[in-house]
Image (tube, rainbow, N blue to C red; front, side):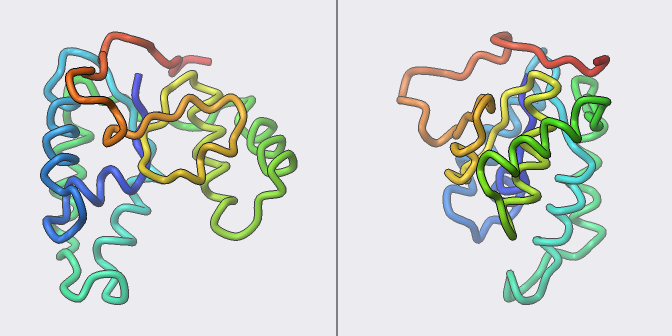
Length: 160
């Protein structure tokens, strides 16, 4: 099951971002498939932080529009809210220690730990996630033409 990073949602939402149409179509195909996908409330709050920030976008997204976008994601019958479980903090701590994470890599490690703990595939265009051992990372842009991602490939556990 897929668990998506902030950048996937930002690129799918904002028409002024690189590869917007690709990411929008990819996200719509995930949401409209028959397979479950996971979302993190922390990722969704980060999405809102970025799209409404006047220093990130010359014309930021209106908060209500951002919330509507999130509602489309969370209200899908296949959407599963994923929260940290008992092993999350230890996985997170191990990741930040083994990678010597600092600054912006700290929240990345937190998200990576969530995906690892739950067995989800982390979907991101951020190459920095490659440093986290045990994380199954997918960048939709790097899938060769003709090779479609299978939504049936894996599942992650929401009841650990």
